[in-house]
Length: 332
Image 1 (cartoon, rainbow, N blue to C red):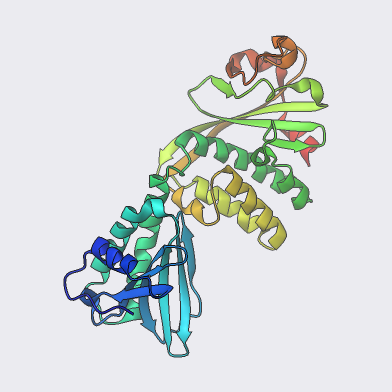
Image 2: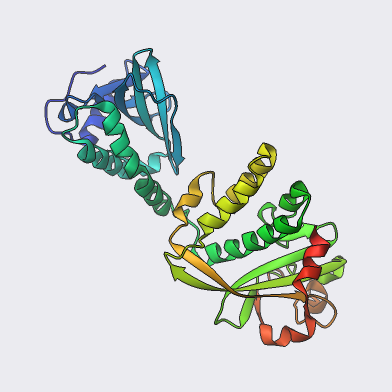
């Protein structure tokens, strides 16, 4: 271990000193400003991974693990009487943000003398910083995508309420896997569209999305939503409801989490979607069939035209409206 820094912490200077010392694979430097706590900055030279360590002594805690975008946090037992919290930065593009993160943690534990108490204090900062890391990477879903996903999960939860086969139902959510429609069961498919309650149109993403000619049954399910800041029914809550419903089936829970990852919400990241609540104003289902106002390959009649995006006026769909229950019965 390198000698102790005697001046007020300058995070970047410490990293520079560590990077100059490549005599060991794992170099670390103690932060004197944290005394009597034992805190270190370290670099794993083989991967150039930056790390912050906080010793918490012989803590009663047996395990701790947390991940957010670019960062992983672990409780590691060094020996029978010594445990440490390690915070690793895995994404070098976030070096500057990581420095701010560490500076914030150091500020919050300043003056503390007990490592375990210090760990409890810094835990309170993880949620705030996890969200900030995700935002900086541009990886939080847009509000429009949150609304759309809330609608899909609302329909999925409705299917789970009616179904006796959870595996079949979770597997029918095929949108995350790249299917043209959000849900499919054999040759029956459902495209779910979520729209603000005041908006009389829905957006169609391609000429394949509502191509009914290759299916036995295709339905358009439209959910009109109002949004309420800090409302109770958030995307986070909907995800938790579905997870609780399948939690007794580990493989099924894993499948659901994998699908969430595909749509942009990795494991544990649903906590960032707790600010906007949704209120369902209406739900309507339409059968897509001959005469339905759609653009498909057959009507475009030009093999050179692809990725056609367009809007449908919902007031024109009244002749095609069908009972939602009949759609559900075809899907379960």
